[in-house]
Image (tube, rainbow, N blue to C red; front, side, top):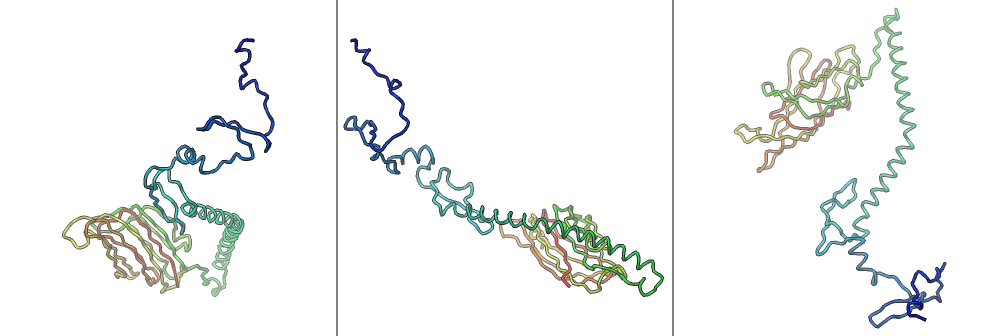
Length: 298
């Protein structure tokens, strides 16, 4: 018989359907070819570490650094972290906890979405009822009833930039309205360019002497100059009265570092508003972005 007739290829071997503990594996070692019982075949970190780190995890060579951003109180690895970092659980626990936090928040929002829709419909219906009641009261011949004013006195507003500036008057102008004051009182008026909010007069559903909280956050870039506020900017709030007079009610200078003309202004002010008053703002060296909130507090 020729030698080639005795050759057996691996493909000629019968295919097994399972491996039993008593079965054996053929392995090539530095001391020759050996057999090992399947029950003694162990796969662990020691004998697959080179594959796991260099091919699967792509672990970085040399020193690895971690960098985090804090999001909703959780530390999250950012893209400045060394690529291929062999992460530990404590390094990614913030991402896991943030995922749980977001899941709970979305679940809670879903549970109250029906209530939000229901409340919105109820508010819309209430507006219709109040408008109808106001029409009835105005049309009645009873002098007492016809003089009743149905009102919600608030003139709340939210506006933001980027901004437009008027170098001649220094009047501050916004570009976007998030909350129009006419939503809370139809007798309030708002203009953006230049910014001005006018409060209702007598008999227009407004409480004289109302107090408003005004908050704002502005950022911008000044210039190197001799004028005092060239670097930092300066915000001033004026209350124009119904009698034609005007009063400065608040002033705030920005904050800038000694080596930069970038400035920020964060402020909270409480202003008393009377019937027919108007609020307007001026700004030395117009900011580039920011937001203004005006809300009735009493």
